[in-house]
Image (cartoon, rainbow, N blue to C red; front, side, top):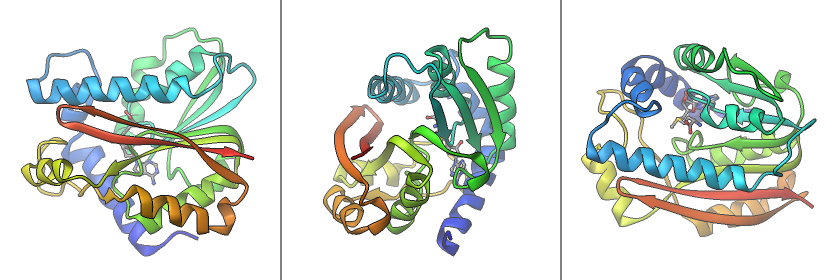
Length: 233
Ligand SMILES: C[S@@+](CC[C@H](N)C(=O)[O-])C[C@H]1O[C@@H](n2cnc3c(N)ncnc32)[C@H](O)[C@@H]1O
């Protein structure tokens, strides 16, 4: 069961990524020129994607991977290039449409299946690996832990995700509203204290089969995100 705060936030994110910020997001995730500030975000996101992909087996043939909150699908396509059978899901129909358009013509060793919906939907099936890059950063810590719990039940090997670290810098950048494209209804990024998150994960019975393994913070100008890895014991 998900909470009302999760459902409310998911609805705000759908509005934001599907309408308010869709053009800015499409541009940020393309090769088109962007402002210097956005260029630091793009570079940081590229580094984060490369980091997360480096935590997965080099050969993903025959492995099922969920790209949870896939946006325009950059990580999903890289995983399919390495042979994975990818389900890439996002609440924004427009971003999923764009992802489909961008990657439709590619011949990939793996499979790429884009879906519109909630990453926590049981009907998506079971996976070897789940990756949630910057898609849980807008949720509160209890909702992140609940989401990890629900995703963990369907994960056979590893669950990779990012959170927004609680730092004075992020708080200042957040106040300046420059981390994401501006918009009246831009949902807040929820800074997460890593120690508290680790403790809550450790206390969550549903996550007992998993151990926290690698972690890595990526900072690039106005991009700041912390990757964590949960590995099935
Ligand atoms: C900051 S973007 C990151 C997109 C992509 N992972 C990337 O790194 O390019 C966050 C994405 O998560 C999606 N999202 C947020 N909550 C979601 C949920 N509960 N289920 C599916 N998608 C979700 C948003 O619609 C948005 O496209």
